[in-house]
Length: 314
Image (cartoon, rainbow, N blue to C red; front, top):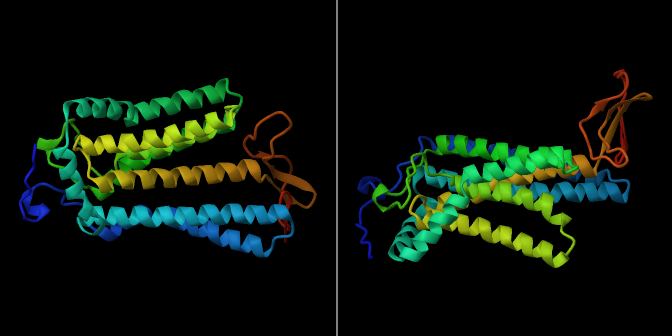
């Protein structure tokens, strides 16, 4: 099948998405990523300047790398969202990619794409996360990881709903879609959820695999799964290419936020003390995973000291 495109603006042909109301407002959707990234970088720089031990230096580098990564993801996601809202910039690639995929459809590929898109749906991703979180909380011996999986999945679901409403991008023409979709186009919920959910499951479960080769094969399969789920949405004609990339970026950003918070909480425990009384202690006890912070003693307000893995005196 050959698809002939008219040389008229997409907004008047009805083939693409007149999109969101105000580009500036759309950009604000991803501001939390940028703020979090900048905060991590600032804290990392301050921690590096005041570093007294090798552990302090390691914490600073931990925060710096993740802060820079989050800034990059936030900037890319914001640019994609703004372009999708205004129908310009990076969205210039959308029409050629969409046309090429429609021209190269076959019966076998269509069947495969339908199966992949069903397996990679937000419903299936949510169910996977629910089962994994339930097992970790009840029988897996790592309640902290169960909370992590639940938080990543719940946040991803919320991001899909909120960002679609704010950007408000229209999907590709209905007559070329091979599956029915009724909500907005940007970002792709399949792409966002697959990155977040499969990513956190990989981080939680693959380190339990004894074989190094087995672990790397598992990580590779996760990457392949995320890519083919996104491509299936393009092939079926229900998303523009920037919707899928935007979904990957948004999901990766949320996953990075959650993993950074989790790793900081479990790797760098902090005890706050006022005078001689311990106020907050979230260090894991022997043989047990890290639990919620516990208030241990009274908290007079004249001085604060951080002990354990860091130093803070006032």
